[in-house]
Length: 206
Image (cartoon, rainbow, N blue to C red; front, side):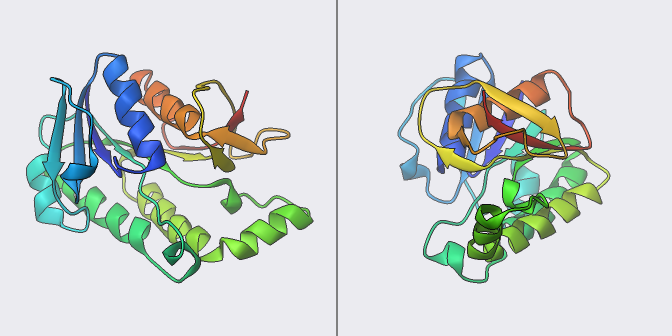
């Protein structure tokens, strides 16, 4: 496959690029700061661009099979009002339609599940700005008419474990954490197998 990655310099995006190349795919990393991509591979194309820009996205997207979006906001901005993922979801959908590409997977967060309990309530309040941004981005994808998949992992950790458990529209039982690499593995599995189309999937470590 030819995979177009948005957010390729982040923790999940880096794992998507690494795993996709290890599986033999061709990868385009669409990034605002190309110098942050240290890896070199004949199947990796690093393309400078702004995911807020519909024209830049539309120009870069043709001949790709799927878009994998792993955008996110890091502290301290993450704890302030922001619309990064929502805004870029809007431009990405517009550009995909112009370019004739239908398949997209988005990394979201488990805080959007209506889980009960003090711990979940605490994180829902702490991450309220992130949740609002992601919720609006998800709504854009759900209403896009594209073949979307949304994955909602809980607390994300480093590590090489690619194994995961999933549940449709719910967090897996005792799903307290997952690795960035496991999220990347699921997003690639879902697109390779063309599974979980029009589904919101909760994910946790196996």
